[in-house]
Each structure stands twice: as structure tokens, then as C-alpha cells.
Image 1 (cartoon, rainbow, N blue to C red):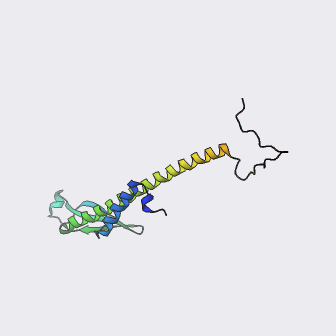
Image 2 (cartoon, rainbow, N blue to C red):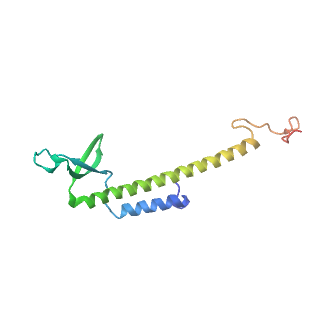
Image 3 (cartoon, rainbow, N blue to C red):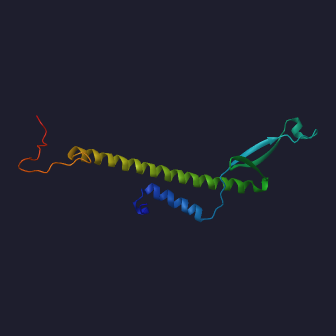
Length: 145
């Protein structure tokens, strides 16, 4: 792992913002908010006439199962904050990931360029160049005309 000072500025900035978000201790929940409209089943209720009961749920996965948690109107603001905080953290992790992938691609390009220039001027890997001697002079590497 390289020191943070050697990381690209974009990556350092995203890491800093993520650490600040997590260090602030703001609660987060990896979930989605879902609005559901349901019929209660009572004969004389307004929902029997088409005006369904609307409620908010927090949808998340527990293992492989999808779970829905009812959110009462009093806790709607808190539920929205939990989801927004988690999305902010995920966006920062995604930004860091993209910066790291771009950095890797750049290093790969530079490595390829170095290898190409090295193979043009050196012997292949594993092959031993003959030692120059009077019996075996160094081969002429100048371009032929």
C-alpha cells in the first residue's frame, strides 16, 4: 500500500470525505424507501372506494431475503436521513474505486510503454547476450539500409 500522499488528488479527496462522513457518527442504512398503497379490507373504509392507505417502508436485504420495515410518519425524516447517508458513503466508495481503476490503467499504460522501449533495445527475457570477444564481436544493431 502506498502512502496517501502518493495517491491521486481525486482519490485522496474522496477518502477524506468518506472518513469525515463515518467519523461524524451519522447513522446510515443500506436500504431503499418504498411507498406502498394498500387496501385494509374493511367494507366501509375509504380504501374500498379506491382511496388506498399510503404508507412508507424501508426495504433491505437480510441475507438473501428482502425485508420490509414499516416507517411511521413520525420517523420518516430519520429513515430518509439513514438512506441518504448510506448513499453518500456508497457514492464516495464508488468515486474512490473509479480513481483507483484509472490509476491502475495509467500505470499499466506506462508499464507497457517501458516494456516496449526495453524490448526494442534489449535481448528477450531469459536469453543471454553473447559476451563480446575477438572471436565473437558485438553484433551491429544499426538499422540496415
